[in-house]
Image (tube, rainbow, N blue to C red; front, side, top):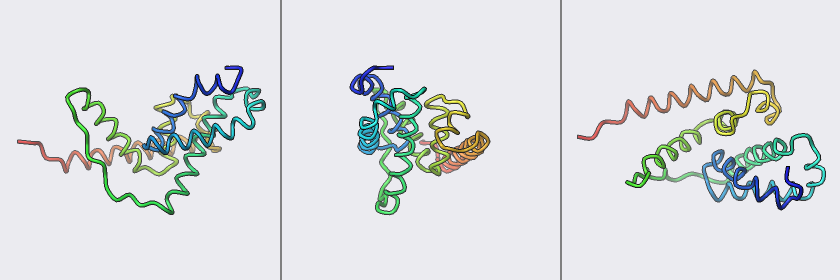
Length: 166
């Protein structure tokens, strides 16, 4: 564990930003979420750095801030367009797949999205995810199952409505 807050931010900041981005799908919002969390963590750094798993504490704070931002934004903002797919010759297919996955994740309820991101992106076990969300591991498994089923349904629907190019 880094000794100072500055060292912690230097070492773990990029990872926290990636987690926030995968959760929200927006670079600017991800930066805002991480900044809010780090401001709060900085005020309590002495206590945070002394807990058994400070990384888990900060990850939980990022997830909770994401959930809080989603609630605040849902009442004020309306999405008016879906961004176009980006496919280019220099790795664009990979970028397009990533963007498509982010769009699909955005269609899931918050709890399912958080569970899938923590499980498959952060590679956390169900017990740790349950701790982050403050629920039972069985609830995590239910959210994961329902989220995967919904993702399958969304991709199946898209594939059946997509006609191949001539």
